[in-house]
Image (cartoon, rainbow, N blue to C red):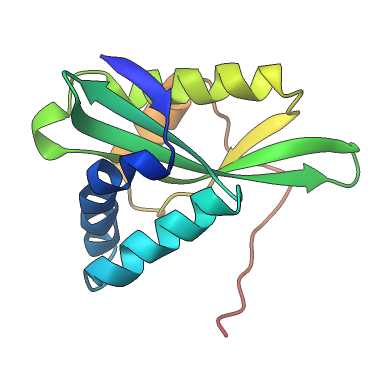
Length: 146
């Protein structure tokens, strides 16, 4: 397995997984819009998308949005989306994607990685805790649906 940084040339491999990820969270497939969304993020360099491949077959992806900490005056990265195709689960794909994200973050002087998961997602919680992520005990998150 190899992990690469996705580019516009990987859209056809990335989009079907992105659609399945969105469907997992109850979104409609919206194939054209999903591909356009990914294309725009990559074209504008607004996201870092790591893609796990094996013999050119896509196994999973991790989509990261760069941001900043005003208090620390340093960049932070937000892991927004992580998906592994069903037949590749339990093959350490997610672990390897997380390791690669952390390695790239260190190279870019990122002070921390941040991720939010659904409160009832025990599998994701175990994944992140096994990768040394710690639950934030200092801040509570709020959202304002618009």
